Image (cartoon, rainbow, N blue to C red; front, top):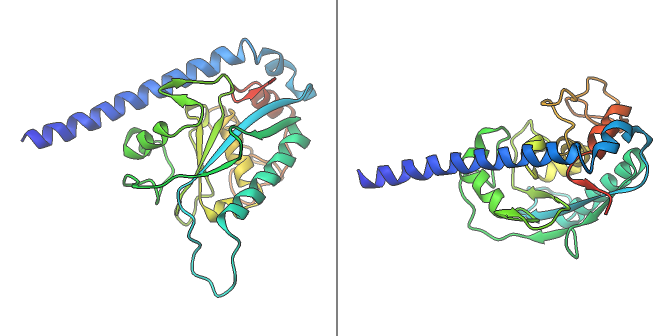
Length: 241
């Protein structure tokens, strides 16, 4: 009986912490958009001057799937995805993507809670062990923000399932989750980062034009609309420094 009560209390506490995390991020995002990000919220379509976004990638799983042909290392796959994303964000938003620390990538060793390595997208995991684990390993956070850069953390896991090409909680989280197949997609990383910066179903900016970066399914294009520049450049993750 006591063991059941302890498990139930842990679940309730995880939900409470997740709700607090979400509320804190919504408040921070709103305050940023009406202060530091206000100019871009109104005039971001000019995409000037250059702004900055910090990124940090934690590698939780590196073993490639079985294949008779040589496969690039997960580090190379990640670097290629970062390079494509850097070019796209610079060309379309005039946003320079830089590493949060000395390098973009860092391995993260286990053990991992259930639901982390084989992650399934959705809001539910944020309220369980997986969400708690990701929250404990966010770049730029130690319960509270330790930097005003608000970096985006990318967790590279083993598998997201057959249909997912990345996961993001939109403005409600500071991380995205990717696997190898997602990183190999031409714009999946850029797309998920866009969600974290506010280009998301919650804002109504999941685009229905196949050539658009935020197209609702793969393959998406690389084009962006003027108001998407306003939303992204006014995000808490996109700074003048």
